[in-house]
Image 1 (tube, helix red, strand yellow):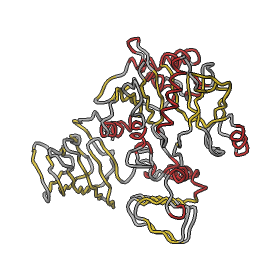
Image 2 (tube, one colour):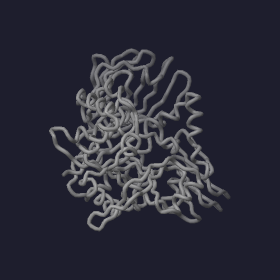
Image 3 (tube, rainbow, N blue to C red):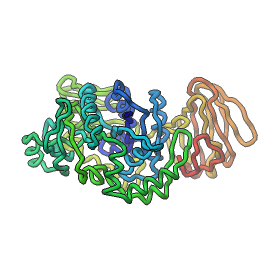
Image 4 (cartoon, rainbow, N blue to C red):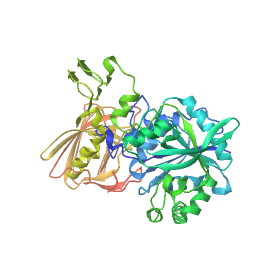
Length: 477
């Protein structure tokens, strides 16, 4: 029976602001290494036996980023399924299970969030092998993280009676418990009977669907309708929006795992971390002198136990300790390391003030490339735009602005109304207000240009699309 990875690419990573933001959250960032968390999740599966094509689920807003990162690592995925609205993990896994069992086949599903760090790949694979044995015996396995300290930020799984498969031991699930206070967490860890709830699972698709039908038939029926009405679009499988919106929202734990008599927990001690906050990142990263974790252009003096991430500017520290300092192009975070859980409060204040820094970085990715908003003022805006080889923006027009383009590298093919022409380095083009236009990169290297927008309104929503290679509408950025 094939083992199919089901990768859940959801979550907003609010507590990792300002690096993680709504439109480019932590799973798409290289938080801990050269690969993004999504790519690292897939890479650590290499070497598993009988592995089939992955099923990846993400929301519509992140579809191009997810597809680009999968293609970049040449990962062989079967489906990239788009959820039109967020409904938590149970419907997402139900969709994957239904997809895996089409044509009356069955498979083992390995359900993994895309934003975790697991440093001990060998131990992880051993735990998967044990969970497979349980799943083949029609159990629903969850992975319980062996706790190394009391933790109030995680839910816990209490183990029950031991089960043995070929000399390997796992346990029935006695209970799922919510995030505890510190005293309760200490008692859990001291007892040895509790594990952190990882949100990772392994089970037969058919068994999960049977249990879901028993405990939440309304959810299963809505998922069936949304999948039967799904349509293919480029790399994507789009679920039927109306049917999926009618689906109840719930986690796997609440919908199935807390109710089923088939739940077992596999202990996992593999240097796992959900990288949910900046102090968690400090814990897992290799420490430099005086316990500091430094990334970027950083100079320190008489400072210790700090996490500093400098993306664009020189950051200097003198005589401080236990600080988190995160510098991006458009924001700077300075926090006490023991208060980083409260970063989400800053994000809420920014949202209440309708600030764009919760949604977008200064550098914004698009399916054709990216742009960096270099400067903005009254009636003007300057962007640095990069178009990937072979890609093209949509054929579009703007009601309220004109655009001046200066090519700084590569070659641009420009369509403006009824004209088509090439521009190369040091050449320029003017796009009048209201003109239909498009820019493409016919070359083999990235095309970069400086765009100066002028007009009374410069918002990204001033766009009318006529043609688009990526199926976007005028209200879809």
